[in-house]
Length: 376
Ligand code: NDP
Image (tube, rainbow, N blue to C red; front, top):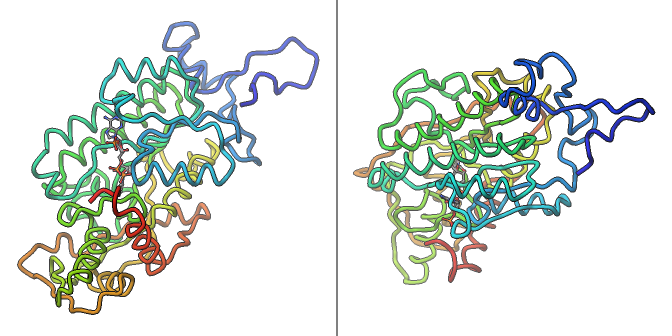
C-alpha cells in the first residue's frame, strides 16, 4: 500500500500526516495532546482521495472467518476485483476468542483493513441449546478483534452483525433506528446482545480514538457454503437438502415447517459480499454522512419480501422434485414479517442483483456438486 506520508509533492520538510487511527493511538499513549486528531495534521481519509476507491489494490485485508459462507464470498469478490494481498487464518491456527492469540496475530502482521465475518452462527435450535457459547464466543471474538485492530492502527474495519439485533416487535420494515427500542426475540437474545456489543465497540473506538470501524446488518442470507443441515440449517439450505433427499428416495411429500405464510427477505451471499465491499470503499465523510456516531450500522437486504410458501415452490422447481409440499402448522412460523428498511443503503447507490429464483438454482447446483464436503 502507498505510504500516505509520501503524498507530498513540494520540497518542504515533510510534515507527518496521521490517519485518525494513528492519531488516536498516539493520543491514548499520551504522546499527543487529547483531541489532537480532531484539531490538526490528521487526514480523515489519509488512505483515500474522495474521488478514488478507498481500498488500494495492494492493501493488506484480513478476512476473519474466510471459510464461512460470508467470509468465503467476500474473499471471492475481493479476488475477482483484483485484491491479491488477502490475509486469512483458519480457526485452528488462530482462535479469535483467545485475546493473546489475536494480539500476537495483529502484532506479527501488517493489516490495513479487517472484515470481521467470524462468528459462532446457528439456527434457533442451536441458539436455544447453547446460549452461553453464543454470547461468550461472539463477545470475546468481537472484543478481541476490534481492540487489537485498533491497537495495530488498522485503517478500516467492517463488523458483520445480523438483523436479530432488532426488537422482536420492531416496526416493519425495520429501520436502523429501531435498535435498542424494545425487547429482543428470546431465542436469539444472547447472540443478539453480543452482536449489539460488537456495534457499540466499533462506535466507541470511533468516538474515543477516531477509528473508522463500520457495521452492517444483513438480512437472511443464502448461497454457496451455507449450512445445509436438514434440521439446523436456515430455511433455504435446509429445504434444498430436504427436497433433493425426497426426490432421490421417491418420497411423495415434503413437510415444510410453519404455515408458509411468514414473509422473509432473502439475500444471496454474493450480493452481500458486494455490498460489504461497497461499504468498505466509502470515504469516512460518506459513511459519516449516512450514519451518526451512536447509530453507525447499515441495514443490507434485497428490498423484497417473499412468503416461505413461495420460496418452497422455487426450491421444489430448482431441485426437480415433483411431489407435494405440506405445511406443518404445528411448527412455529417465527415473526410473521421480517423486512429490513434499506433506504439508507439504497441512497448510497447499491442494489442487489441476484434474483431469488436464480440464486436458489445456483445454490442448489453448488450443493449437489459439493455434497461430500458441504456442511449438512
Ligand atoms: P459461518 O458459520 O458460515 O462462518 C463463520 C466463520 O467464523 C467460520 O469460518 C468459523 O470458522 C469462524 N469462526 C467462528 N468462531 C471462530 C473463532 N473463535 N476464531 C476464528 N474463527 C472463528 O457463518 P456465516 O458466514 O453465515 O456468518 C458470518 C457473519 O455473517 C456472522 O457474523 C453472522 O452473524 C452474519 N450473518 C449471517 C447470516 C446468515 O444468514 N448466515 C445473516 C445475517 C448475518 P470454522 O469454520 O473453523 O469454525
